[in-house]
Amino acid sequence: VTLSVWPLAGIPEVRPGDDLARLLLEAVRRAGLELADGDVLAVTSKVVAKAEGRLVPLPDDPAGRERVLRETVAAETARVVARRGRLVIAETRHGLVGANAGVDASNAGAPGTLVLLPADPDASARELRRELGCAVLITDSFGRPWRNGQCEVAIGCAGLAVADDWRGRPDSDGRELAATVIAVADEAAAAADLVRGKDTREPAVRIRGLERYVTSDDGPGAVALVRALADDLFR
Amino acid sequence: VTLSVWPLAGIPEVRPGDDLARLLLEAVRRAGLELADGDVLAVTSKVVAKAEGRLVPLPDDPAGRERVLRETVAAETARVVARRGRLVIAETRHGLVGANAGVDASNAGAPGTLVLLPADPDASARELRRELGCAVLITDSFGRPWRNGQCEVAIGCAGLAVADDWRGRPDSDGRELAATVIAVADEAAAAADLVRGKDTREPAVRIRGLERYVTSDDGPGAVALVRALADDLFR
Image (cartoon, rainbow over all chains, first blue to last red; front, top):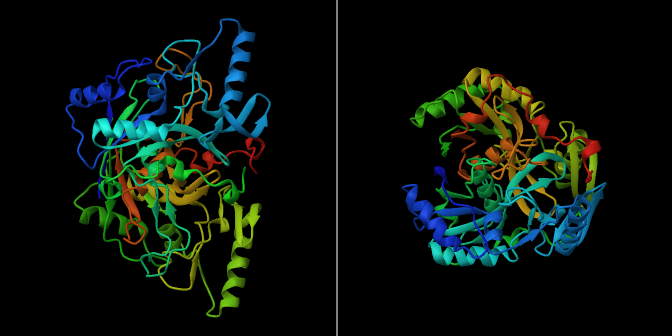
């Protein structure tokens, strides 16, 4: 197996109501690429959220901005997981845990705008898969306990096995694996992130070489990577 | 930027005292590949640990096995982070947090053997970098709070920027980024994992396309990705 990862350049700033599938297909064509059956297109949650109008304008005055940020984060929060000073680590309705419940002002397309996570990233991925004809990941970067920096993970998924469950299968020695479940969709999101800058407007990346994880149906979505509360020792 | 990831097939079972660099170079040659200056070779911690003799034989009787496992995990543990039933989430001397402090019986090369983490994975990476002439990652899979499944992360690193710190740099809109630090070495470890099976004896993977993250010196090592205790809300 060999993996190849290409960023798609030249996608214009995405606005509410834009036909994201069309913009992505145009970028694929312009890059001289194509989307084959076994390909995966990884798209940042930010452009999906923008196309879906998941934007909140901020007022001009600092106090107002602070208040709207706080209210917006609260509205997106299903559960506060940790808090220190102004930093809130919160779980969203999707079960995603991150700073400010995923509410972010970076790469918003306009100064003074907050971008929320897509309302239902798995549904967005399924819709894009129908229109693009290949597997789709919707990704965002999240901080991790214990480790510095953020990694890109899959918050929406359609047409790709989100995990490769080796439990009960033999290792190289023939010994049965007891706990190995590879979070394929998260690793693919991470691979996609490596070819992008944070200032290069490359919200979409084509991944080729994951054919063995590509499925004939949409599959359970990235929500299957959210750990059940009862199994989680850290929330 | 385009990223390409190739697994190296045909590496024999690694034994204590083996010259791992030589085995890796032979596998590169056999694959018809080469290692260029800007390449990254990702190697699983398991083969590094085996070459370094970080193995503990288990006795035959179940009670003895249970006892040796418990004692070995305890010896590798610097701090217990969480515990439920027989599951221990423990921090190692390296600052890595995972099940059983990284002690693992899978792909051990022989039944009834435990494999520990390398004693100093960053030092191992530096030594391999000297011998291979390219950047080196030593990787292992770790579970994550909040999310199902494991992702591969970098536990040793030489010659690759472990993180890409965007704080203070502008996003696509010219707005200064406040918190964005990409854990490049962990994302590269994840990308490498996507081309491997857990039963295919492919402990090494060549990554091409990360030239902009490749450094002229060894750099700080993967230890720079360990979050300082004072900054960590979850241990």
